[in-house]
Amino acid sequence: MGLSHKRVVIGVATVDGCYFLESDVGRKVWTKRGPYLSGESVNSLSHDVHSGALYAATHTEGVYVSRDGGRTWKQSSRGLHVRKAWTIGVDPHKEGRLYGGTQYGHLFRSDN
Image 1 (cartoon, rainbow, N blue to C red):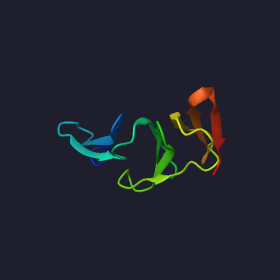
Image 2: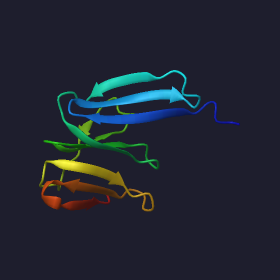
Image 3: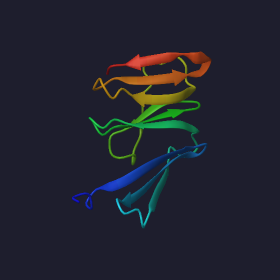
């Protein structure tokens, strides 16, 4: 069917970082990677299919971004005055647009 070369990746956010479970499309064997952002409570993960970037919303340090499949992370909270980020999401209709939901019911939008 042409899909045998593709892999399936599931991101798991936990109170002690995040993990990634990887398998081929057949899902018979899974490999676990992580923890990443160890010691940080990760509330939400999101993947930007356009750029390949991964985003993590964290309990105490705002937003992190990874551009290498989750292996390394960089804090990316400039302009975010609330550090408790509950959720993060990529706009599927507008490339480069990111939404973050934080403590106190705030919703932030970033286009960069």
